Image: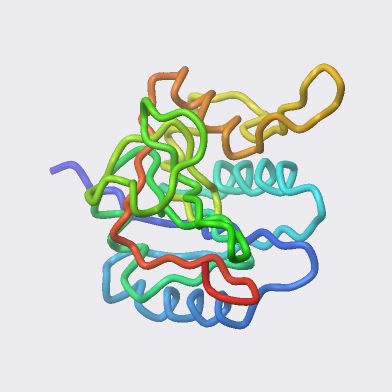
Length: 203
């Protein structure tokens, strides 16, 4: 009988100077609940002002560490409830994450980091599908990636996109989604997860 591969997640933490207390509490909860859900978790921290480079280093760590089946990006400013990682795993998708919001201070309307397939520009959370959906792009603040995906892509996995005059056209998360989709992978978002972007308030 073929031995079942153990699910082993490398949680890649990104930040510049600190991790919010709420985010740290969520990560502690995730570590505590992992054995009861039947998967293994390790943590890796990359601190730096250039997040694309941090993500590339974390991706390489996931590939270099023996037995890692998934890389889970968690940014320093994410809040998520117990069971979130298990729900992402249960989707059994190559790439799947949460459709959390940008930090838009009122009176600006909230905007989702998840863009459904066929949609151009940003979208408000209330206009998202109510069930898991395929994305054009998806924020990387809470994103689960099978290492088998990374093995079929080439570095850099994450890179900023700039226009001819130097203006930023898209972020490192959009770049990753673009190259993954070109390689034949689907990017999925789960809008049912209660994931929040931590700021002066919860967005």
